[in-house]
Length: 140
Image 1 (spheres, rainbow, N blue to C red):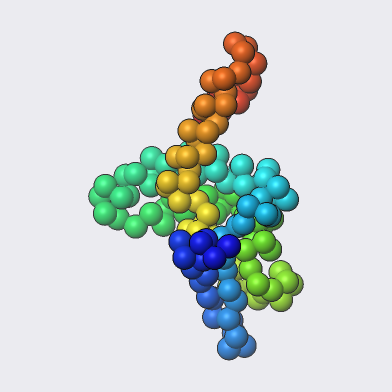
Image 2 (cartoon, rainbow, N blue to C red):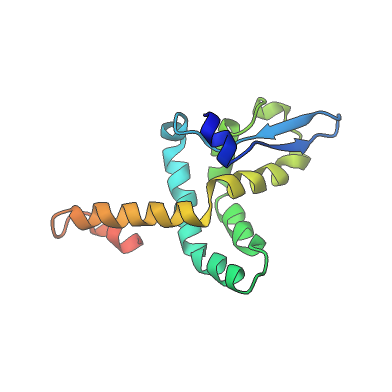
């Protein structure tokens, strides 16, 4: 986990009581617990990849793409959230949840990560016999 902290240092969100909530990327250890939710988020990010690329080329912020993912994938993000924070979910004030979700997206849904997951899905479906996995292929 030390290398992960170097690549994606934890971020802190100030809480109304003066304490801070630490937010870290989803770990491989926890991924099996939220794999469906994570897959949905990656699918949404793939759909927004054009918005990411367009924003980067024009040097505009990518918040619009993040907002689309946050809105469309709110339920999934809330499933992932407990694995990325250092407190129990019931201890997190609702008013900071948008900030936390934004950080979770920034840490876990990078342009590079999305492209790698898409490439993996394409590779796997390309290895399947003809006619098998067509529903997966049609979603890419």
